[in-house]
Image 1 (cartoon, helix red, strand yellow):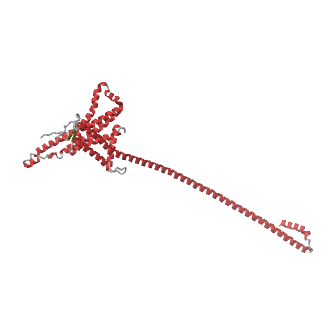
Image 2 (cartoon, one colour):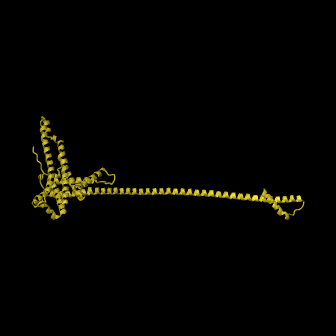
Length: 167
Length: 253
C-alpha cells in the first residue's frame, strides 16, 4: 500500500484537519457545553430561588414572631388592666356596701331612738292622764265634793307637773 | 533484520487537478481523525443523556466536571471571563489532541503522527493570536509592534512571530512521532532478542519458538506508559496551554 512520507505536509489533509477542528469544536459545543451549561444555569437559578425563598420565609417567621410577641404583651397588659379594674370596682362596691350598711344602721338606730322617745312621751302622757283622773277621784273622795273638773284642771296639772319633775 | 518506519498509509487518492494543493489523499490520518471525532462526539452525547437538575447520575457528574474544569482552566489562565467564547475551541483542541495521541494504544496510527494535523491546528491558533493582537492595538499598532524595542529588531520579531506556530506544531509532532519510532524500534528489537534467546534451545522446539516474538508481549506496555500515555497527555496539555497563553497575551496588547 502506498504511504506518505514520514515528515510531510499534505495540503488537502491540512485543510481537512482545520475543518475537522472547527467541526469538532461545534460538536463539542452543541453536545457537551450547551446542555451542561443550561443545566448548570438551571441549577444555579433553582439554588438562588431556594435561598431567596428560605430568606423570605425566615423574614416572615421573624415578623410573625414579633407579631405574636406584641400580641402576648397586649394580652398581658389587657389582663392586668382587667384585673386592676375589677379590683377597683370590688373595692368601690365593698366601700359602698359598708357605707350603706352604716347608713342603714344609723337609720335604724335613729328610728329606734325616736320610737323610744315617742313611747316614753306616750307613756308619760298616759300616766299623766291616769294620774290626773286618779287624783281627781281621790280628791273628790277626799273633799266629798264634786270637783269641778274645768275649774281645777289647772291646779291638777300643776300638781302633776310637780310630780313629773320630782320623779 | 530490517526496520523501517513510514508515514500514514494512503487508502484512496482523489485527483483534484489543482496545481499546488495536489491530490486529495484519504490517508490513515484522516480516517483515524474522523474516528476520533466520532469517539469524542459519541462520548459527549453519551455523557449528556438524561440531564437532570437534581439527583444527578455519575455520568452527568463527569460531564459537569469536564465542563467546569474547561471553564476554570480557561478562566484561570486568562484571568477573567473575557475568553469564554474560546472554551469550546480549547476543549475541542485538547480532546482531539489527547484522543488522537492515545488512540495509538489500540494499534491505530495517531493522526497527530502526521505533521499536517499539527500544522493545521497551529495555523488556526496563529490566526487567532494575530486577530487578537490586531483587535487589541489596531492594524497599525500590530505592525508597529514588530519594530519594538528598536527598529533593528524587526526581522527577529517577524521570525519569532513565525516561529510560534512552527514550534507549537513541531513540538507536538516530534513528541508523538518519537513515540511511534521508539515503539517500532522496541518491537523490532525485542523480536530480534526473542528469536536469539529461544534459538539457543536445540531442535525443532527452539526453531519453532524463535519464530514467535514472545518478548513483544508485555514489555512494550511498560514503555508505552511514558511514550504513549504520559507524552500523549503532556503534549495535548502543553499545546492547549500555549494556545490560551498566547491568545491571552495577544489580547493584552
